[in-house]
Image (cartoon, rainbow, N blue to C red; front, side, top):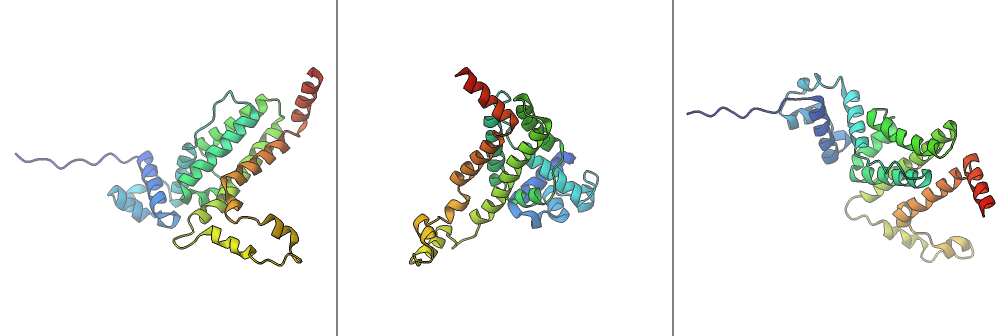
Length: 227
């Protein structure tokens, strides 16, 4: 009695994007080619074009798939806690999928998942009384700070074997104090430049600034009156 060969799962856009995300994680952006993806799915590259129009469409789909991995914070958080949690979720997800960082920074992601992420940010800000303009700009500055920080962070965390960022601190050894008195006193840390502590410090500074917008000033004035 002969056995029939196992049938391959039916190819779909979702399956193509899932495998493309895996290729991106394993091989990086340069390794995400139609040939590599076809080999992984055990189909000829032309079969992929039934599900993605071209390489740009594939990349847009992968980016939205990456954004979909960002856990959205609880909807009942206040604007400050909500934006802080969102920024930390974006950073953590990008660090888990470092190959995604470059295309996310280089091209806008306007898929459903990106729109849902924006919807969350707008909801906590508008719900707190910020204007539509300040809601947009406030969310934008939090996201651009987060993505820019991660764009610096990823290559430093993946600098390759034999590279230790902390070794760069020796540049401050024997620094002429008469020429650089403040630098010698502070003795900055190369590793601290993109540390989690630095990210949190910058994020808090940004949120403090957003709190100075008219909504934030009115809120503090009401609290002062009640006191």
